[in-house]
Image 1 (cartoon, rainbow, N blue to C red):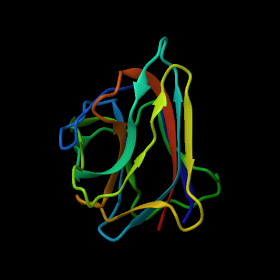
Image 2 (tube, rainbow, N blue to C red; image 1 turned 30 degrees about the vertical axis):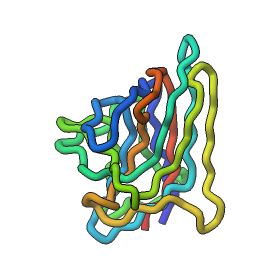
Image 3 (spheres, one colour; image 1 turned 90 degrees about the vertical axis):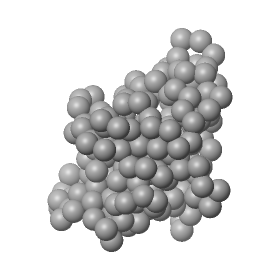
Image 4 (spheres, helix red, strand yellow; image 1 turned 135 degrees about the vertical axis):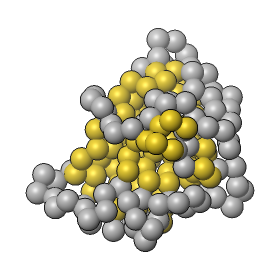
Length: 169
């Protein structure tokens, strides 16, 4: 039960339709480490670095199909506890930005999603959950066990950096 910070640096938010496999390095994903693990997303921050106007329709949503053969994070991306004295989890979450077959954002009208749109030309959006209002996933299978931050259809591709603060139980 320790807060972790998962960040991806300078990635291209590119329009991807629901129920379509995402291309590596065009999303951020967190999957539970076990079938009973609960993960609360507490904050999402996205900063735009595009060289010209680029409206991006960012969404935090659940995956309907998980990414397969995920790759470990590589610098400058990272995932680590906010407190250095944190003990290791028995079943660590799986944060990733690359997979052989990318995850698919759910198109179910019954799945929660947060709209976090911004202009990647210097725009900033920060969503911080009020107490008991966090975005939660449970387990490690679709649907419900994986969360994806990605750009929705209609987005103008633009460079962004982002972080997700989460806590796993």
